[in-house]
Length: 420
Image (cartoon, rainbow, N blue to C red):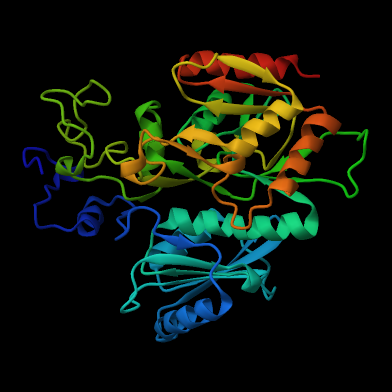
């Protein structure tokens, strides 16, 4: 740690202070989880094995200190049962609560302090139940809740779940679909900040289709937001400095509070990421972009006010994002091209988007959606084909690696204005 720096209100932490103790003194709402990223997961755990693991976890949960919280995800009720105050806190602030007394469609058990078990996550499709053992990292819990609801909505309610950001511009809606770290939040926020723009969500959308799907449908498809807060990559503050004040009053997870813990090379005089003076050297007590997997839970209404927030948007345009140094800046896609790209889901793993040893490598996320616990490619293709072919929603793919954020934003705005 750089002991020459002084934190907020003159508090000067020491080397022996734990991260969570430091942040309590700093009056900064942040929690440092033991596992600061996703743990190994088995998304198809056999019922017998799952039941044995769950029994061990329930012994700990039944011993006391547990929380039971039910969330309403587009009509699907997911119950979280956990002994983690952190997970319960983020969960209750992330989702809309379910009505009192309603039975859950699916359950998540999250138990910490289970002896003899490594941090891991398990899901049993036949039981509609997930189990997290010895991990408090909220991101994986949130994404599995979305995946569990997606499986129910797709099979029972003809609803497509999209890993994408949604925003409204002059009454027209855009869905931005992309792998983690390529700019979904950045570009949805660019529209959000426009005087004519509003934010819906930055991570997930539900799109319900009539059954049967009509050949010539009337009206537009609607994308709905399941979350009342945005669970954001805190590193977005690097590009948008004004977000620091917003993040400072929000709930944070795994934000770096010591210069020595910065995971990027330290410049001799300036930050290697911003080419500016290090925030710790400026006397600030934390940095939002020195750890690629830190997150912040932000209430949408508290960013720019309720009038800049909507819970659903019409789908006038779909934008896919990729980031490389060779593809064209923009390509307009036909239905078959768009579905081929989505199905393949090829992308480069960026910092904070996966295990550190995989950063910079090429990977695949079918439909750019790593949250789907029960992947049915045929159903995904059917939904997207109807969107592009039957509803005639235009689709473009932008390369954020060859243009500036502003240039890509201007393309999105121009494409939206060109839609009927």
